[in-house]
Length: 98
Image 1 (cartoon, rainbow, N blue to C red):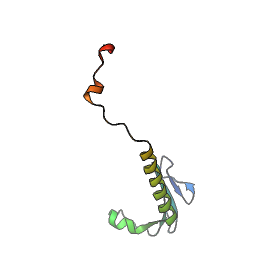
Image 2 (image 1 turned 135 degrees about the horizontal axis):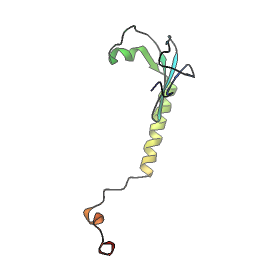
Image 3 (image 1 turned 180 degrees about the vertical axis):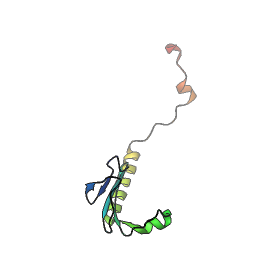
Image 4 (image 1 turned 120 degrees about the horizontal axis):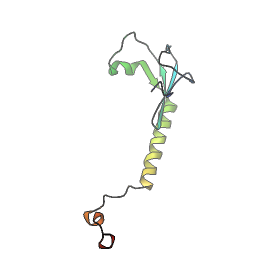
């Protein structure tokens, strides 16, 4: 994720070895979603996810933007429904095609 340029540290592209400081802003892109988080704490060791959640906070603007984009994707999916599965009769070759 970092090597692909999907992580920005204080507005600039980051490398995997970047030292993170408190109150730094990280922008993470995952597919269509973009999250902006603020670093609230740092630990020396890798900790469980339940503890790691307390070390950062997603910004309100980021949450609102992601929710708005998710709603737009859902609305777009409703306007362009996927075709149903073809029945056996529809898949079978017609006599004039043989």
